[in-house]
Image (tube, rainbow, N blue to C red):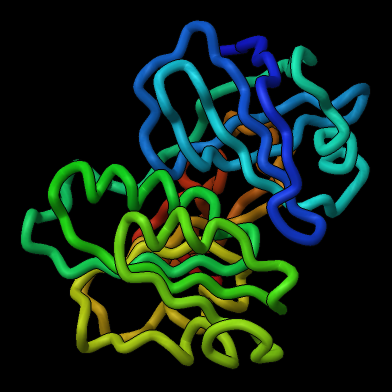
Length: 243
């Protein structure tokens, strides 16, 4: 479904990172981990994960990497965005056992969808922890927001904030039975085989159509087939994909 979103607020939340809050007039139930495909000028749509939903307000957090996201970061209150979605399959929040021991692991721009996921878990009365990985202190965002939901550990590659190293430096697998993760492929690959019973990975991938028609975002599977990140995912069980 195509929506016309109206920008409500825009603010810089870290170096090169923007928070965009928009009004979705025909707001519906949106599961954590799904995304919207946003049109930016004459360019192809950009898949942007949903960081939060409150009533008819939807929040996007993104890094200004290419021309499309740089243009998104220049939008002002009142501007409109042509948005396709919500798309994809998200994290199975409603199927998690009440006594599950959950850790959410995000790396860089993989952090945003985990905030909404953690919020919905907490609303169900499920305790969980978060590990958020960034390059440096200047790039850290939403630390306070995560801490308001539960125990949160920040890691930075250069050690300027939190624990020095990658997210794996702070991950203690024996303390958890369920893991939700989103981030760059090397990060997901590093935690794909950690000894945690249930692991769900949200894959970041370049997309064309966003609805499974163009086959631009395929990912190989152990049985020799392929899945489409946009329509079969972006969330998969760790054992379903080869990274």
